[in-house]
Image (cartoon, rainbow, N blue to C red; front, side, top):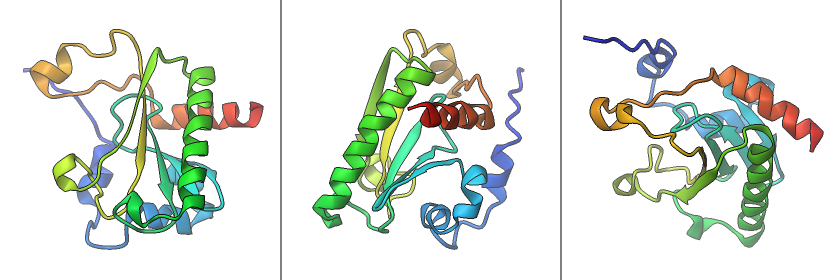
Length: 161
């Protein structure tokens, strides 16, 4: 039997999941931006790396407001979030050079939202042939780069934009 080691998941497994929303916590603590992988703070929204990504560079665009659906957001917040998504695409194209993207919002647990109480938009970079037998046969994704490295690459790319 093969083993895949993922020691970084232990932090999540052992974390208290009954406390403050992880997104609200990240938004409220700018001094922890690097540790939280927060890339960009706007007036109404922010961008953060997904800690449990589908692929390298999987970004989340979130409002500061803790709401479960985009229906509760005002026009300024929605506009800023879409502008951030547009800039994130440019950033990812420039730095990671994906062949395509998946962009979406999962509303509610039944729709696949891991944190349903705080709406967020996923921007998932995709590469030709990035799916292989691992997700199909082993229900496992292979992420080829440490998040810290991806974060540094994206932060450098933002400085150059």
